[in-house]
Length: 434
Image 1 (spheres, rainbow, N blue to C red):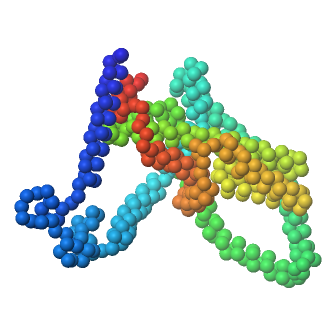
Image 2 (tube, helix red, strand yellow; image 1 turned 180 degrees about the horizontal axis):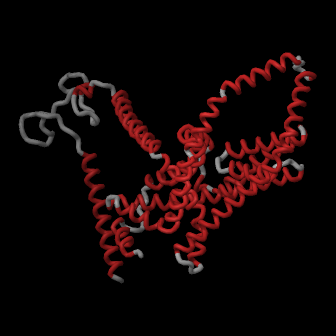
């Protein structure tokens, strides 16, 4: 047995002995019954007899309860005491949560890029592992994977933008034809609107647009003013992703060593399980999004709907926001099919979108993601809504993976299992690690 093995065994025995002593002291504290001041115990000598509220003829409700510290508290109903205890604790938790949200909102320009970098790191980590097993240096493997992923994203966006620019004139002409068809239907259909009514509605819509032009313009100006922040965030994402991929394990060990010794076991176990959950979620989401985009894109090509590739790319990106994103991007494909190819083709594409969503929800999500990242749909909807309110599109993007990670972390922290490695051994291993 090596010296390290002997040290590890001693640390484990010492830790288990300490845990046993703590359990014993807690059990003894629970078994003790508090006595009234000035009364003698039944076994103690002396003339004083044990007195209780009932024996003295007093109101039984005046007897002290184990959860009270004075007779004034004993006069308050037990249910009200419990409700008050819960209330002030919830108020404290709410205040702390509000303060944290304020802090996060203040430094969102740093928090959001770091969150995106974590998602990208979880997605690209297996590729870095493959290169490391192929004897690549760690820095070179990280750089190759990061540059390759960036090139794939830029290339895809370039193809999408070029195809969209080429097809805009044709789609604009067909959109005008579709608007004229809608006007004819409004006049000859069941509504029987007159030309005067149509003109009035069109004038009202145009007036609304003109009245809100200033708001739209100010929004565009503010968006242009944040280009520097967007560039800064992009650079931070790239640098953070590089260092997360290269030194993520060292960073995590450093953070674990900042905690008290007794907490290192649980936190290390919960953190590594949460990282595995995040990686599984991101990779499964990419696979599901690719299948959604392929399924809808193939039918768009079959029915000769314009912008088939950009619409498939939009479905792929939208699928990263579960339930909501893929449905909204599918609606865009249906509208393009309606304008370009007519009602029948639009209904067929709508059926395809609904079918793909059903296959995703009932087959792909349970099969690919599994129980490790299983989240109830209600939690998904609430998380997305809260993310949109707090951080817009980025909040909707990171809300569900954040819920999945917190779900795994809380389950591990609440578990009663004892990890295999003692907390002090974590420090020893970290110190000896290269």
